[in-house]
Length: 620
Image 1: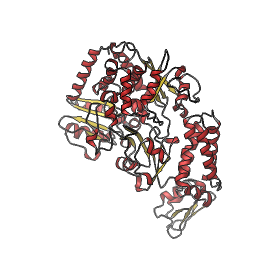
Image 2: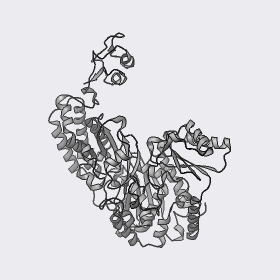
Image 3: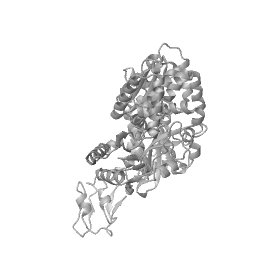
Image 4: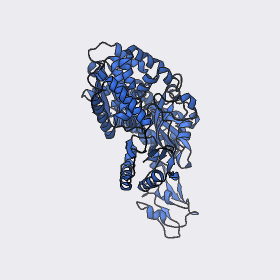
């Protein structure tokens, strides 16, 4: 792949765009994100290759993409062929793959039972107006190329308007004009804080310094969150392009992508994308013969949650222990190696090329007045359809959970949703019609965070869930400041005692006092928000806490010390199924006679309750 000039780039882009629109033949597209691979997508890809080779089918191209967003339906496969609409198949196994070849590719008939709806509108940066498609629940800007292009082929990215925004910044716009478009757009940081991006960039642009840096924060550590990972796996060039735009705007020549080592596929595809961009002259020395130099290196994090905080990330990037430092000074003026540094997370950067290409006003027209644009969520938990969701800001929780997510699994009742991960809080059914934006979530005691959204049902114990988040915070605290180090540990100890039936009435007030002290006195944002799960659950579920403490009762039957299993004498038929399945065993009784559970030996696993066909096992 040879280095190209500006004219050659223009020609290549035109050729690729035309080639994509006029593409003939059949395309078999297999989703090969981490979730798809885990579900067996490699076997499916091989099956299609083997079948097509064996049958000698002409004009059939097979390619991989990143995650399409339907994580619950993986492996997913899209068939694109002339004279038939593009078709998306889900939960494809080897027999279904063979059936798709036989019936769809050869017979031109849909394999109906396995056809899935597309998760979102497929847009190009110059694509249709969102406002004319108000019926759509999802609208993809950040994930516009995920599941569409092969992330390991730079030409496919270029065919989708790739690097056009960079060209525009290099040859048609002054740095002040870039900042103005970002200001008009209203883009706020998607890492959780929601700081205006134009202002962050301007602070670095105005700062004195012989060297400046641009950093992509890919250290995504929230439980249940994988938005940034999927963007890096499915569309790495959009991040590279955005970083180059930032670098030109603030006069930087060096960039760093900080990504956790637990993301091997993202790291691999980033490496391929960086190499291709350098070879083509879109990265490195004299980009597109503009005289501008900019290159990027990858730094691997060891998986410390605290390194998602920008000052801790800087310390880790410099080779030191990842621990936060007080602010001010801020990284925008005193960042990496004490030089002016722009730090944005993956999702924030993925918006930049579209904003530059289509204009700030276009981006501002999406979402709400104070929170423009879209937001990507990883929708997980007790939800029917888990996966990646990208919606305009202002979409309600009800729309996300029920219209997009398909509602609660197994017909159970919705209990709460945790947004913002360990830094966020719970949202109850009373707030399902709350619009998703920075200010609305803060007003009800939660936060946007990076985008994790974990749904809970009636079978979840709110105290046990809170204990899980607090245990996470204890493990991930860097220990530098006492409020976080001691406060999270003490809150976890109290929660642990409550779930074991050893709580006392004063514990509720103690949790509130320690939570507020931790929030007020911790050094960094992660410590300051670590008490949010405790404070928000106490705000909405204090009664459930008091049930644990005063009545020794866990209504969800999750806290083993507060649960007992007995057998109803009137319902037990003596089938012996519970006794056979009991792992201890602690259930005795003869066939067709009443069975009894030895409470001293019972480990509260609940298997007897799950396997009983006569509802004879009572949970109390």
